[in-house]
Length: 420
Ligand code: SR1
Ligand code: MG
Image 1 (cartoon, rainbow, N blue to C red):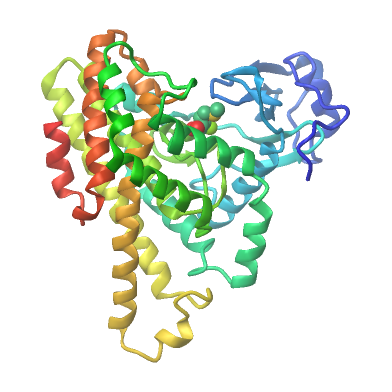
Image 2 (image 1 turned 90 degrees about the vertical axis):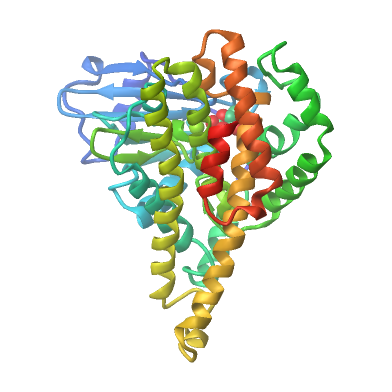
């Protein structure tokens, strides 16, 4: 697979897309009516791609196209259009293991146009919007905890046949351009005066300059960058934040896995948890009613604890009943009493929790200091108030990064968050 733009590639518009699709839609995917009567709206508000909603008289679909550059930065920041291939293929894998309850269906992928089509989620909105509005989402911890357990277990050497796991690793190895974005934006740039950094200035200038001098934090950030680059533990979503989850009143679906590759499990879990912590700290600038705020913040801290707990329980269950996977082989453990397996699992989750907390803290730092901020904070129009919220989040992030090994569960962290 090359990273050049194929001859014939062109960014679609609302006008061209129906003609392109009329030729490309798989048989059986019938939108209804003539292409010229279809309604097309471009709704992409993420950092990278074009996203179209296309409706005929019978059916609506989503069409996503990768541009040869980073949309949020402009044409000078070039980026391979192959990311559409990786996003499509991660969605297929996630669908295979987590099922339609948690992942939208995909319909086709076209390498020439770097386009794929997927299910339109008619009654869903982006979770981040709900968190900003202070609305609770029923069963969120069940769904995201379960998504993490299923996708990470089944694509790891614990749950997957070794040859299959190595083939899966090879098939995502070429997503290196998106990995490089993460390596730069999360692990490196927040820790020096990188030109792309973008924080609430001048309010946070001193805080940010202090982080650039904080060798304990930098030491750990570099260690976890290396882990991110070298630990091919499982197929990651790669960008699992509240903007990559769509929710209806009754369910959640995970979208946008274009950063997917075989990496450390703690990266996905930590990313998600870091974003819940940011939602928590943004509340002080979003919800003026103190009782409503405290109630919602308590719900967010519960979400963090329960998501981990659901994840750990389900992952242990899958592990207890596994029959394949060369790591911790069933053939060996069945010769011992269950204490030995439990010992292996306790050890595994202790390390994973520590790594998860560090990754959560690193995600928070980068969203406050680096190129890609989050709407939770950006929505707070008053810069002084926003900086106060972000300062509290930076304090929490430091605790998560530097004292990760001290926290063997989330109870002390709940207290710490309330004191930041
Ligand atoms: C240039 S892309 C910036 C960020 O947007 C994506 O959603 C990822 O989080 C990435 O780091
Ligand atoms: Mg995204």
